[in-house]
Amino acid sequence: MKSLVMISLFALVASLSVFSQKSDVFIQFSNEQGCEPLITEFSLNGVGEDVVWTISDGSEYSGNYQRIEFDVPGVYSVSATYKVNGKEETITEERLVEVYPKPKPYFDIKTGENILETIPPIGSLYSWFLSDGTEISDESYQLNLSDLNPGEYVIILEETNSLGCSE
Image 1 (cartoon, rainbow, N blue to C red):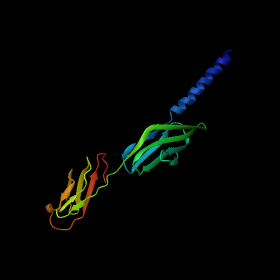
Image 2: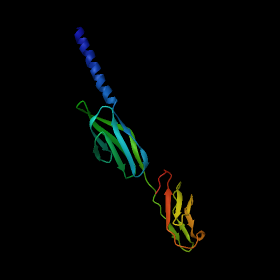
Image 3: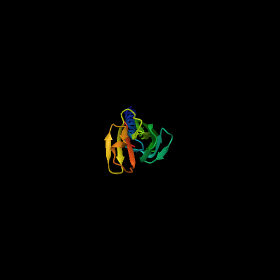
């Protein structure tokens, strides 16, 4: 009777050990959120082999470590399928990768007023760069050309949105 009890205890310990190995495996992310294009690195830490990563957009990658560039704004979930001691397991990380959209800077000339103007989204900041080295950075969505010395200029507008993304 004693040997039967010892076998049962051994079986219980063995099953706890396998559970412990599974719980020690986790997905590690870098850059879980940011502006497009977002480069994210994730890896499987702990016991795991033959890792296949599945992204919610349907793409798949193989290997314990992956470096992926997300070009399209959105929220993505990541799952990893892997083997532990030859047995296939799946772990799905609850954290998500969120890719923010970049702004789309645009300006137009107000005819007859010598003013460059953009449509100001709420919370955006603007930087106007002129080829003579002049830089005007503030919340202004207008650039008055009458304030410039006569000449030809290349003008670049940079917009930073409320998420901190610039273009």
